[in-house]
Amino acid sequence: MTATAYTPTALPGHPHVVYRHGKLFLDGVDLNALAIEYGTPLFAYSAEAILAALAAYQRGLAGRDFMVCYAMKANSSLGILRLRAGAGCGFDIVSGGELDRVLAAGGDPAKVIFSGVGKTEAEMHQALTAGIACFNVESEQELEVLDAVARTLGLRAPVSIRVNPNVDAKTHPYISTGLKGNKFGIAHEHTLQVYQRADAMPGLRVVGIDCHIGSQITREEPYMDAMDRMLDLVEAIETAGIPIAHIDFGGGLGINYDGDQPPAADQLWPRLLKQLDARGFGQRKLLLEPGRSLVGNAGVCVSKVLYLKPGEQKNFCIVDAAMNDLPRPAMYQAYHAIVPLVQNNAPASVWEVVGPVCESGDWIGHERSLAVQRGDRVAVLSAGAYCMSMASNYNSRGRAAEILVSGASTQLIRRRETSQDQLRAELGTLPLAG
Ligand code: LLP
Image (tube, rainbow, N blue to C red; front, side, top):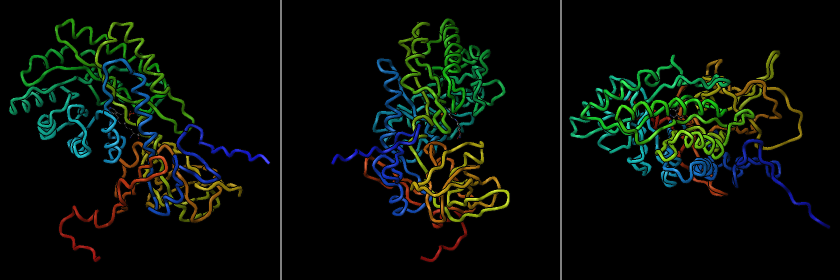
């Protein structure tokens, strides 16, 4: 008798999320067993997927002088930062709190760049003292303040100007930041003049130029357009006698949520490098600030079905994860796939998958076809980026626990937040018993 080999089935577009004999695994870990051990809602991340996503950038840029700075706002959990730092990755930060996290995770401050439109003087002081690689400056007033803070410290702050290249991510009306109407960056036509001002300030040292045109970009053209416009500016700035040591093309590469097929980083970058070479900038140092594409599809959120509530107009499937854990649907009408942890052949019904928070906006998925019972568990996919980092305590719900999966082994990287944790920062409260 010949035994037929069993082939586990990975979910399309989610190579690390696999059904084995009807049970959902993240790499070598049975998610149901994990949820029984740690409770729900629970975030689980594949270390292999996290490192593979970084490796795709490193492959795409091989042979060039480059630095990938993980936009840690996508997921700033220390366990994930440690993994990144260990792989030689740099970090794109947007607050003093993020810098503290990088340092706590053993990251190298010399590989940190600081983005954001509203850096405070205290944050500038902190980052200058830590010795970060570059400030991405977004306004003339910010330049003046940074110059003053650096001079009081007897330092020269390394700066890039963030340019708003006025490029539309076109077919993708998601999160666009590179258009004239956005609050970000300095208008393309004023850039040269701002560089001349920066160059004349004694507390500053011009080191680069920066842009970031938006997020969840699934096409190549917006990058091509932005690159062309950035290189025009580099030519103009250098002709005016100000050398630009590095060019930062920002982040923004999309991931698969709902069958999206963005180019892979190791395919996109060789094509962009051709354009860079053709314009004679192939040897220039390149910086990138990817966030979502480095972690988004590495994570899932496991949640339990609390109640089924069939109705006349809609059927509600109430799960224990909510908008405080998974804010993207409520904030951006975002789609996240939802799949059962155990496959069964029962007939499916169409559900509005919602959380327990007291808001009609607290939904996780509309019109999802699922065969589920009370007590079953589901996984919300593509939950590695902009979920836990945007989680809140709304409704005084403790934030979820997080697990890092490596092959078949697991590591608790954040324990579930307790009410004690939540009360700790508030004054005038009595300690809870126990
Ligand atoms: N650099 C800068 C200056 C940024 O503002 C951002 C993201 C990134 C890099 C990283 O972009 P990514 O590679 O992750 O697309 N919460 C929203 C996304 C907000 C993105 C904000 N900026 C969401 O959940 O879709």
